[in-house]
View 1 (cartoon, rainbow over the protein chains, first blue to last red):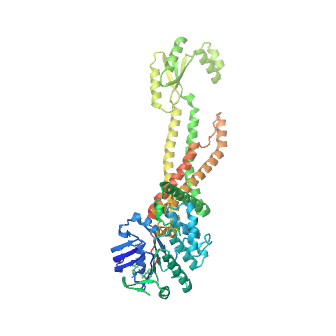
View 2 (cartoon, chains in turn brown, cyan):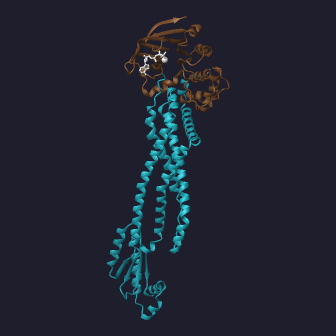
View 3 (cartoon, rainbow over the protein chains, first blue to last red):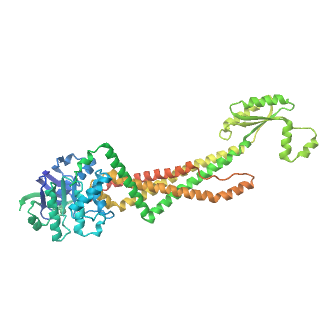
Length: 221
Length: 323
Ligand SMILES: Nc1ncnc2c1ncn2[C@@H]1O[C@H](COP(=O)(O)OP(=O)(O)OP(=O)(O)O)[C@@H](O)[C@H]1O
Ligand SMILES: [Mg+2]
């Protein structure tokens, strides 16, 4: 489902973030990207979101070779994947409902279809009935759930998340990671960059360890 | 859970059109809500646009009215053909009919010496002096009303010349020179108004452009998030263009209201001046065409101003690097 082949990423500053990286994630798999700060975890996710382009190598996501996606095709590609961020990236002027409905509207959903999908996904993340609240009237963990709901609402093949538990205490973090685990069980491929070594081990999920821009090991605890 | 997203793209055309229309409706509503609900700044922008539109529009109303007034001067554009003395009346009448058939003549009327005298007595007040002369000194005359006199000075000159070569004519007189000056002055003012209108149109573009650019900057974070989620440039541009359109449209409505007010205020004094000169002239309210032009033109200018100011700006906003 996700495949990196000999990928190199050198930023304009000259910093080489990834060199000769190979990795692959199967359909419905939950995989964690781990490694020390500066190892290149965020860079991998930015390449997957087409926020950056690799300087060398090939990346394929759900059958799409990203090198073939032109600038004009980026919006349509982004609509096909779900993205979750450490700082949620919710629009605070909008209600939860409007935030979650946004990707559906972008993708061309009809008005009458939105509500049932929004309510269903809110239930999935455990926030039934919270659709009219504004994000900033909620706790950090709840905001992250809204962010996850927004990433799931279009039922993407792939969900990527950069430090989704970075702002949460360990209990909330475990809840969120378990939520991701159940999402993966429903058939969605999930790739998460995280520091929460202990929790990952507790979940027993596969890890891809990065160091200095290379995969240094794939552990399945 | 839910049907996968890809299904949206493979929908029947009608549903895709409907989704597109809904997106437009949403964008228009959101833009209007933000504009009305928001700040004093946006109301100020609307007021400034209204004022910028009302200045050339006032001039336009002025021009429409002076042209209206000029229509009352038609009688002053008549050409008088004084006939040779002792020309028989029947010949004079035949000649009048002939002149009346010319394509550049609207009407030709024969005035016999007797009728001429009666008219002269009436408006000169010199009736008794004429009596003293004893015998009617006036020749017969033909009063010619040219077609298109006020619009075509060359044609009227040609007509005057032609009539002068008639063997029956003694003298041809045209008194409309001052009317001609008046209409060419109005034409010059009209040209000035057009130029002024153009300048004010540019100022509306700049005002809307600037306001919309500030709006975009204020919403930069939101726009970045939308792009991150797969919003196209067109999608994020849409509410901005609608905002421009609303600014222009509401500015146009404000301009119309100001214009009506202005006209109502000067109407009384002007008609008092006119009646002092024995005229029934009254200032007319702005025409429906002008009102439509103000509102429609305002909306179009607002849309264009937003497009010019924001489309590149929006393209350049890229989802930020979050670390
Ligand atoms: N936009 C950028 N321009 C230049 N260099 C960058 C940029 N983004 C990241 N880098 C560099 O690339 C390397 C990898 O960064 P990246 O953000 O991928 O690491 P990370 O594994 O996510 O680290 P962390 O755990 O701290 O989030 C680092 O050396 C970083 O300084
Ligand atoms: Mg990072």
